Image (cartoon, rainbow, N blue to C red; front, side):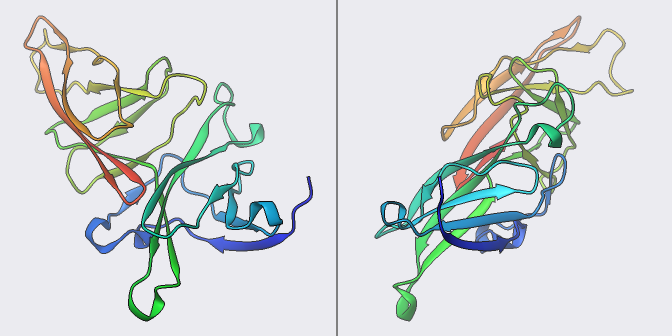
Length: 220
């Protein structure tokens, strides 16, 4: 398929977030440069495609509309040469929100690109998170200032998270942690997860899931 268009260079950066949600991010493997491609075909007017240096082009998605809209997640599959062995089906997702500018610029559309999933550890200890059915685990340090970008390691498996509190030297010897049950992070809600402990008290964690201009914020 041939398509003519305009290639636009863009950077996925915390500064692109609206002021009320600006954060400092730490990506899993770093965020490669982002490219947008605007299609000029008559049947695809008002749509663009997206890719990073290590991914294939996404499916076309609309950036037009008469009011504020959350396009949601735009997924790009990582090229086989850009991932480690065993992670060939990894995907990278970007959140897209489209807003109409105000005042004299009311005919202008503001397109905000953000990391789709952001994990914040509000507990007093280090935790690990992983996708249900996969072995890859991401370590998330405690503290509200540590916002970690999350990408699903395997796009073929269920998009649920599991949480594990990391054992510390001060923990009792009989205290052994276990992974929590799996929970979905694609819907705004509040829930509680239990991380089991053999020979000790179980650890419970509140999980709050919020949407902010195309991003899903997972507060644990």
